[in-house]
Length: 65
Picture 1 (cartoon, rainbow, N blue to C red):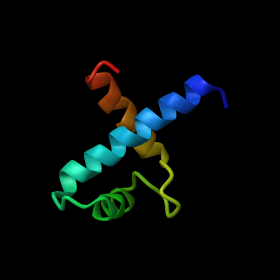
Picture 2: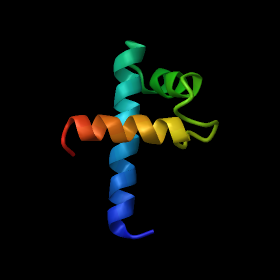
Picture 3: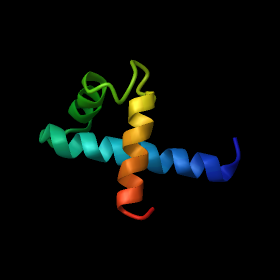
């Protein structure tokens, strides 16, 4: 993986975790990750599932990133 792809994946992952953090309203990262799993955005290893990749891309495009 080249540095640009790694950078894009980090941005996408951060966008999804931030989205889960906001929607979970718990103010806790662990709860946010659990929310992401239950929402079908993250797998059991906390990697993005295809839906998580899509949501992350939409979030980044909405913010022109």
